[in-house]
Length: 247
Length: 320
Image (cartoon, rainbow over all chains, first blue to last red):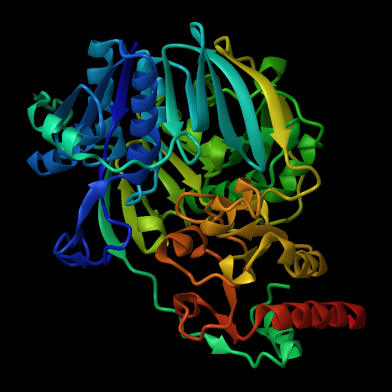
């Protein structure tokens, strides 16, 4: 079985979010980069678990980005995976990224393709769905568990207000979220092994973005919290009714 | 023509779709074109009544197989329907299903996508859509460069607009590929509004000290008719079910009112709730970071404040 795990580089959750060049560009100054948590904790670790159960499983990691994404993909390799592919393309929008990954996926004939539920920077969560259309392959979003049952797979996924269990066959694309696996810390052996694992660089071919970011804005700061005396809940109710008009 | 996807669950139209139709209708008006809705499968709702949200027509692909959601199959049918009807903008709710099919529809129509729009597009020069990025910590204005556009609208960002009007219902023949996914079980929380659709949410954190203390929170929620949520440590400790976990890795919500009780307001938690219209924080620690993100704050012991708030709400309702 061959698994392709899509990896994205994102700013750490606690990074200061600021913009430069007339609010057209994210300020990377002082930002610590991490593997997008959904890609790491849920999809990559799930793939590693499958390989631990069945050593014949092959795991490839793919990322679309410049050379500055290599420390991130090495970090992912330290957790697990057999080899990584970096598509050298800045990937100006999700469609470009998906098209590049689809080209890799076609070539590798993978049984399972994992993405994270979304990236924590642009929050679009579009790659899995786009791959589904580009590869004409079934897609199960928001997967919370995956079990193999012969040649079939049993997947649980989040739905609005609950959970659904379904049975599907491979090849299939899954977007992974909480529940799929638990976060792991890479060990020294993994870190050493990652240094010698193959990291193939493929030149990107997609140059045409469908969308362009014109500018960023930061939300206007809240005018400040209005404190209400803990003994005067009638006042809070009044404010919620008359000022906020939410109840 | 602006085409709006109607999301259904168990043959009932989801509330998020009414907001998407309202958004699509407002956009159609702005563009001087018509707003039409698209339903896959069958629903118990009165389709003509969708007119009151601003859709002039409802196109229905009357195929019972489509009552079971399959992201790939639905996307292919929507894309073919959009082509057949000549839609230039396709609107989805940015809920779980909408997120799962809008990007695939974009691929099939060679259309640029903005996922998670939080306002109507600016169409005076170009077509620019604003969306939330960095988990609500910033907005991006995104120009869609393609002739056909796909937008998914963040829930509770535009609101449901109810007017007058009746839609005409038109059957639409579109071939659907066979689904390769078999749904074997659906487990839904009975009798509760899904958190993502709730307008009022009461949420508890570690400050409540243990699951046995949730009674005061449930009473408050009941007095308001609110849904209940919790922070990650609470669901991780199994004090509350996992589906109640809101935050970066849990469910992201945008209710009109979010009341946080005994939650310190870690950045990961805020990422899941900072699109709420009004935030009330109840915490005994005046230094809790959540107060900085709150509209109203009460510094005090939750075990005294929450029952007092419940009593005040009930009193206010009784006098109304």
